[in-house]
Length: 133
Image (cartoon, rainbow, N blue to C red; front, side, top):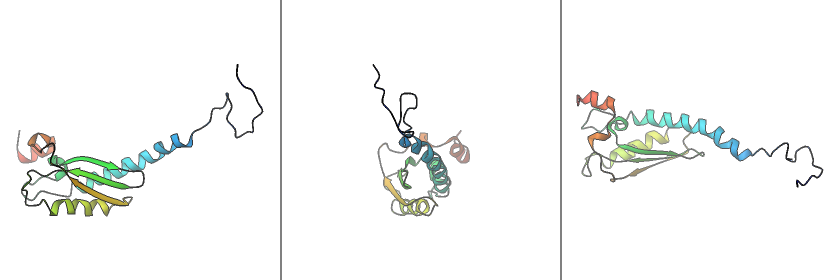
């Protein structure tokens, strides 16, 4: 048996379920996060491994991009080899370019080696640029 009691107009009833503001926030913040993700990818496409004339995003060096609703961006990336000459400078360049984007409150780059990079990670565009078809 349903409990029927007087309610105020703002109080939820069986006929008018409570609207959760929490469920509205992810939808509202999803669009800005998606837009920011596109900006991050655009910025990453301006970074190059000097030994390979392909940007690091299409080269497959970017493993993950995480963006919080607060605008903190974490990029997990690798290099073509652990002894890569840009091991110190490329992550710093990536962090600086991402941090400079409007909407980014902080940027972090995590250099990872697992799984190791292989040419299989390259985009179709990168393969075409390098003539690897």
